[in-house]
Image 1 (cartoon, rainbow, N blue to C red):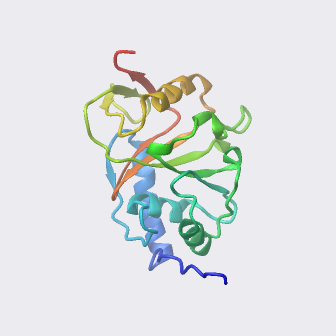
Image 2: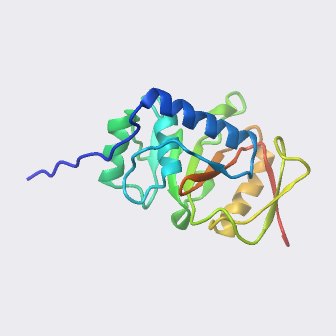
Length: 200
């Protein structure tokens, strides 16, 4: 007997709400390290933060393969994403345009596409659910959209992940873009931002 899973709700007004969410995502990416609250209401599967749910519903479409990492590779999330976005799901991380990830179960960043020298924009965007966006400062971010530098905590991501991201700076303009989401809030980390870990 096959069990049919009813997808969680998405946007009530997809056009208007996706535009609102897109503006929030753009604002976050233009101001790396600054917490942006995604006010747009979006239904989501249990366990997925509202901010990242709104981001996925806004960004993913028929032409953007999505890879679901450990913790999100469930029938509930798959059904919800297919129903509301039509985005194809890929079993290969390196083929993903977007990846939904849990901070506690992070794969190596090199698992994802960094784009090419000719088409750096093909680098993946990683949507990472983290336990918090505050805490003891552990690194400095510098780059476009940041005046001087901004002190940042690890946000629940292991130091090894941040060391991998630090090493990626030499690949620019190739690389990956990150959104860190917790509840309704998110922080963006574009590939153009350089990171220095305190004490490293």
